[in-house]
Image (cartoon, rainbow, N blue to C red; front, top):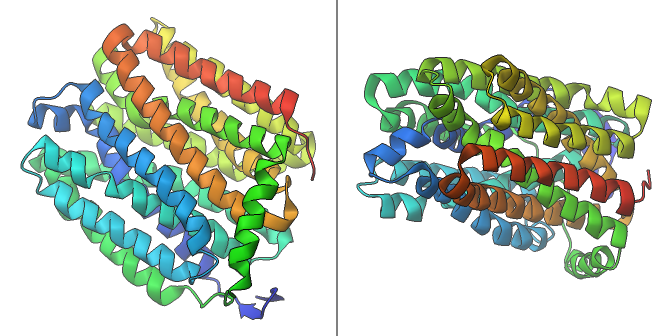
Length: 395
């Protein structure tokens, strides 16, 4: 298809959206591996789960600061090139983690994953904004959001199978590393050249920062993103370990449950647009974030496996519906500086990931998984209340 961009006409082929979705899928694979095999990695280096999980914390902190820098880089350099470089960071991180002889080396190189994600994911959204007009943009963003869950659907089974064969390092050697290498090649060759940037945009980025920080509704929306992403870390980082320790599920069964959970998130992301059209973007964000937080608490507080499992499957669906709606609500806060808004959103999401993983690890060490569900579940509820009381819908 073709449409009139700000600077030039861009012809977008049918393989562009699948390639962008693929970049989101493969960028999540290192996190899938760590989330699924956190116990095995900790056993290799004789470190408890709460300590081992801090590699995600450091990764998210680095991603926060690098995401802020991406906002400036994206107005000076080709976003396609930044995306390819981001996948390259993920590849370098995976290679060194796979051969790490000690936990210290793992702690040094895994955080490069955070830098890679902070380059890859925002640039994927930026390229969607450049390639697709407004009437198809929301649907394209929904596919990108679903891509993160699809990485769990695909990765959980393969990573678990390889880990059974030869340990967690095999999952790096024979799946994650080759997949990232393919991702670099495909992203370079399949994505068309986007519109060129000009130097005046550097000034626009600075003005955009000021405009967003002076907008109470926009800032409130961003802080809600921190809390909701922190809440989501219970699913991403600790749910597999919780199921295996509290309900004694096998590694193979846990991988299947993770896959079903990821499918639930994927379905939520894909139907989010339809629900928004019926209920409104703010109402959807508030309602489904609130339900996600409550369900997380039920997940870890319930002594009954089937009740916990039901909450485990429903909470990702609620997050899947709420996250695209929240991005749509956020983009409406300042239509003039949407690119800067996406950079801020990426940074705040990474900060939320760091808080969720860091606080979560401390809570597991001190109060166990019951305390984890209570605190991170409350974060989700609080995020919904911030949206309800402080954010104005401007769409």
